[in-house]
Amino acid sequence: MFYRLTRPLTSLVERYLPDPYVFVLLLTLIVLALASTVTPFTPLDAINTWGQGFWKLLTFSMQMLLILVSGYMLASTPVCIKALDKLAQQAKTPAVAIVLITVISMLASWINWGFGLVIGALFAKALARRIDVDYRVLVASAYSGFIVWHGGLSGSVPLTIATAGHFSAADIGVIDTAYTLFAPFNIVLLMAMLIIMPVLNACLLPPSKQQVIVDKQKLTPAHQVNTVIENATPAQKLEHSPWLGITVGLLGCFYLAYYFLIAGHGLNLNSVIGLFLFLAILLHKTPANLLNSLHSAIPGGAGIVIQFPFYAGIMAVMVESGLAQQISNAFVAISTADTLPFWSFISAGLVNIFIPSGGGQWAIQAPIVLPAAEMLGAEIPRVAMAVAWGDAWTNLIQPFWALPVLAIAGLKARDIMGFCLLQLLVSGVIIAAILTWV
Image 1 (tube, rainbow, N blue to C red):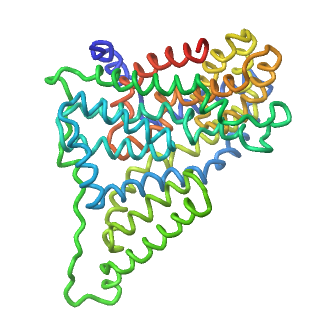
Image 2 (image 1 turned 135 degrees about the horizontal axis):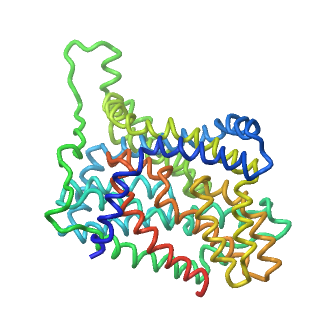
């Protein structure tokens, strides 16, 4: 039904949307130009800040690369291939496949955003191996589940303001998650997304004759087997011996059991990486099998390696020049107590295009929207969550977060962004309405 709307959008995106690397280069030039013309920064200030900020996301870049390769290695184990295929068997038609992957991805993203990105992409490949369905819509649906992450258990804004001693504690105190993540308006938002997005995505499917079906052979990982090498050297025996991988994998799983069950920690980016990695080591059994899988996974991380430093530079210029604050101030200036959540949502969505980091964006916008909320008498928890949802919303068209999904799925950004654009428009109307009136 909606495919008639997505056809012109898809054609437009395929024609004019460049590779994400070209996109970030253009974004860099735009931000440098704006900072040099509409802020007190001189061109030299902007370039110096950009260069200094270039390296501020190195830790996060490595985390994203690890979550991609560790998720890929885990998914390529025979056990996981069989498990994903068995779950994929529940989808008997293309529409059911789209609904199923949207729901699974959304639930996983609600638990943890990194977990949701990887699980969604891996399940998309499993479904495409089992059923003939438009692969572009399938991957776009997997990515659309990411929209709920900032309203979920790993949301950086609600978790920050619920932490004692956070940077805004002197102004607003500590706000329990009962008033943010588990507030009625946020629960309504989550339920609305869980109902509407699967239905919307199913409606994006083109007629069967126009669907883009991927070659299933390209989606089938090679099953790992224990290789017997005649006259093997001691080094080769270690590489192909299962005892080493199983022992280290069990040690890692034992540590994670302690981390979650005894120490009482929850899922975060590092623990998700550890979970994927140690299970992959255990289930691949031999070091040789794991390394073969790693070699297949690494090429997909090229975009992360080259692009994330540019986003770090963009973020530095946006923050230090005051450009991000100017954008947020412009929306706050036209707000009332009733409309502040709406304009906070819109401004957060715009700022997120340039600063695709939930925690970093909150550090910039909180000093602006929180005093405005106090002055206007608006609900502070609702305004904070409006910023959080705005950050998550425009991730639908921000290649920064799509890179891991696209790398695992083997697609380019232009393959899915036409569908994501319609998802953005529909979800934006719904989120804005609920934030304003519920």
